Image (cartoon, rainbow, N blue to C red; front, side, top):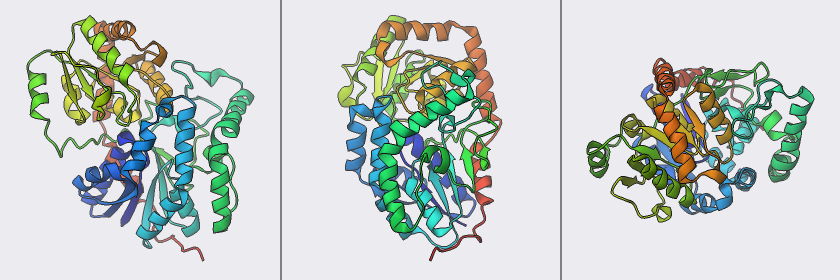
Length: 419
């Protein structure tokens, strides 16, 4: 079989697709990945074929926008960028597609979804976090710790209607439907409610204990687990980092997200909190210009596989991105989060429900409250028990293998070319 993977987003979005592609290739399949240019080397190192669909400059321009991390404006930035690349992304898929190819799309690779319609191609949508799903039952948390699941059904539906009407559709539906008319496709509305996912197969890349399946989630949905791939098999740790880890107590790892270029305040709070606790700090960011001067008790790396370093850390402090969060769960370390937008408030809330983490809101993310929250996590024996429990649950299954099993089930013989 031949698989064409189209991830959209940052490292936490792309790495799972690369891990899945690597497993598919090991099973004898041909795998092609098309995504942004900054991930070309990651894809190639995994032994997969890579084709860029966005330049380094485009990726940098979006990730440099400070509004990217705003609870409302961040989503609008992403939707506008996705709408602007509909035709180019589609053209790239068209160049790479061959009869019998299975499309494996990210929820935001809208051009992949359109191509599935125009060509009748076998396809699957992969969802990394449960907040993408809507329900009349359990709801994602719009703010950390705030659970609207008990609202009346009419109010839940009304909120989602307003989200579509004012936050999503205005930035996406007009260009999408203008293009669909040219392709001879009917218009769509309520994109995230009615159209986003492939009707053939949807795979949630998280376990049911993290987000129990609701009765009105997509009928084509299957849940596997966290796809824990971060190049740990391809690279050894840098020697300076190994020396830092070896010469003292386990540090606290601080990372604000691989695409975050506006984390000055996050890192100032990290160093202040570490000093208050008498702990060492490991800071991860590709953008060193927003780092303050580092004391001898702190060490910076642009990127290292979390699976290699987290088992040697005392705790993880992050933005609650789903990829980072999953690595923290697998390593069995307590987690403090600073959720800003997208799926992060819901992810942070689910960590808290599991008994392994808490959060400090961005407006209050300063050294003193961060240190206090970390101290509570590190001193609570039940937090350690719960961390060990969920880590064992992750080790009990191979989520990437299960995901590939589901992808291999897709019928390539039913593909049709649209005349």
